[in-house]
Image 1 (cartoon, helix red, strand yellow):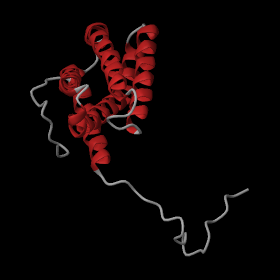
Image 2 (cartoon, rainbow, N blue to C red):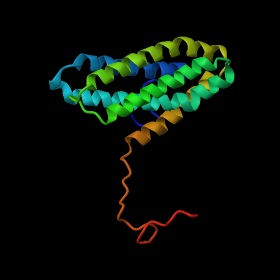
Image 3 (cartoon, helix red, strand yellow):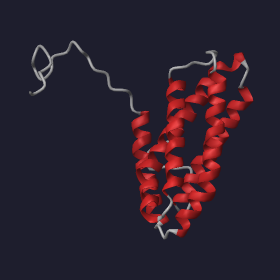
Length: 183
């Protein structure tokens, strides 16, 4: 997807954008469920898990950077947002595990399944309780949508750019060795 172009252009506000992300992730988990347990589908599994991890990583960052701080300031329900933060931490942990695993590894399919179950619970709670809280808090959901779309473009561009490699043997600023850190 090119920066500035989102498939969720029909969404009028931030909640519509978040819901579109949720729907996309649920569809990816459904696609994974269709190939789960099939060793001849390892390539497809790897593709799906990469997409799932990328989508969730971007989505979690959007919520934690833009949505949750606004909600914390606008509503009086720290427990609800604390639970959402903890659910995100659990998802990040499973994503980190999946990033070093490969289809066919012990617990690969089970790890994806647990991530899907945890995200299904998180999405359900978010779309009911958090979305209702956002609607009732008087947050400008159209302005938030613009912020979310812009930040999502940045994050997706970062995800698509090739990784930066560091040549440990290359001189640093013309020096033969890396400069010492100041005392």
